[in-house]
Length: 348
Image 1 (cartoon, rainbow, N blue to C red):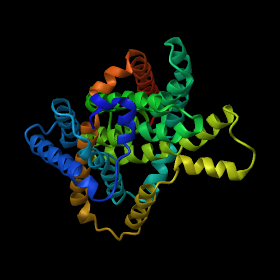
Image 2: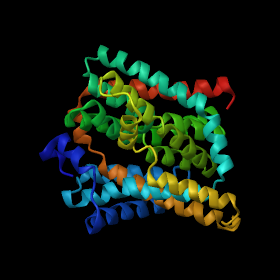
Image 3: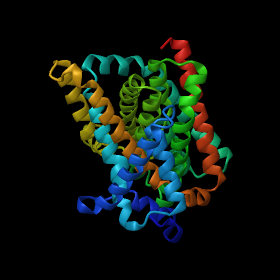
Image 4: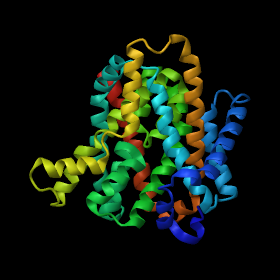
């Protein structure tokens, strides 16, 4: 993606990716970076393949920006391969675990979301950021990163340039979370479950949630995935609220169903995740397959994170300017701190 010539708006279009054989060149590159990261992880086991995948991906993209032909495959790695990894993680959970973790995390999840959405307009106005851009950064930080930005964009009619700036901001703090959150977790002595809730409620995109949690431990990753998927469901009421605020919601269930469709509240990979969890609950997946499934999930996550790293546009971040980045940083710190405080208060 040569954003040096086409700018952040073109970058946002390119990040939508492609399908068919067009994904192969970029996917091969992401797999190669992931293989290198996995090899390096055997030398630096404390860091782990997923974290090294995103670091090496950023390094490669910085040295030589991937061309347009590679963009669809890189996007496929960061999106579709990550979704497959989440599905594989579902094979290691039971429906009872999914329900319990999801319900137990609600106080922390709702608290972090409320704090983020309350502060986004206040800090954004103080920084002189447009309403649409601060809304996009707010929902991206509070709910589910680029996916939330994509869902909200048609609801508020945001300009493509604002979308590109918001995505660039979210990407930066995704990388920061993958690198720093495990360090913070170890420094605070967080257990596997506590870190899973922390990552699931305080990291932006699903890919980065899974990467940060996997580097902490497989148990943390399973918890984080459930919390994150529960958090993603919040996009529907947020979209409805934003549309109502803009006067775009007419009474009646038809309009609400249309908005829910725009938000893609039940993506196919989430259904597959729950199906595999149900199959595992029925005892149809042998317990002996656990280690192999864990290794498979880790490799898929590493490929996905390599794709995320390869898609980072440092030039785009420079063009974004300091104000959106300052807002993103303030909200990122707020969500992380709120998650830790609420966990301490609720005893999770």
